[in-house]
Image 1 (cartoon, rainbow, N blue to C red):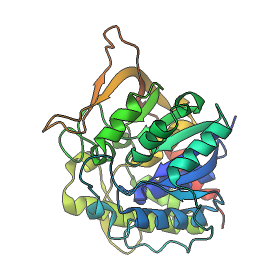
Image 2: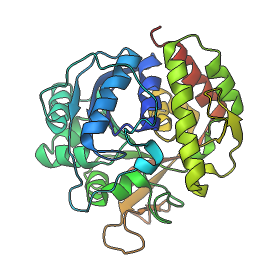
Image 3: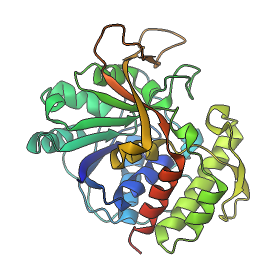
Image 4: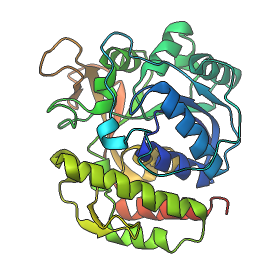
Length: 327
């Protein structure tokens, strides 16, 4: 059965790979793409989403959403994703005009028009999703599910405690986790198991589609940025690879956002545990932490937390999806 999804994103180079994976996978049908400020400003990530959709052959509504967090001061990740959000790689010109609706309205419209059919896949800060719940609480029951990239049950990558997407808007994340639905939290612990390996690069290089070149060039920029920053949390256990993109060897990083999309494609690739996840919004050193209790302690779980991923199956899915993209 094909899963219909809305990708709520802040592209971002790993967002680009997630969108390409969704576009090329027959198991999912992308109903819409919505954008939120995160890796870069709203204007930049929205332009990026339109360009990625053009490269992926996705003719779906694309709507811009919230341009700042609910409460906290805005944080961006230009040091990782570059000034444009997609590094120094030139993606195709946009094809489809931007939808006139605000992303929050598009999310509500789609979910309420198709109750039980739309899975929300937020792979950026959770501002749009929190605002959608606040505006129309009935989407909690009407959505088929929420599968997000964010958080961690071990350690963070922006602070010792917090992962970037949650840290960028902890109050929004707290609202989403406490809304009354079950959230699948694809946190940092997953993508650390699926890094960009030399074998993956070699397989993508063999593909005869334009998107393969974009993937190689974009990952070369991304991994070089991670290496220069010395982000040990993102590069532990990785290797130096030559992408063939003219940038020389780079340190292989983790495939964050594609892991969340992969869960929608095939949950059987994952080992999961039920948990209670609460987002810390008051602590100084723990602000943005996803406090994860696997013991439950007599309370009902509000989250499913994937803890292991079949890396071989994931790489196969990613390569197959890129190969299926339009030439």
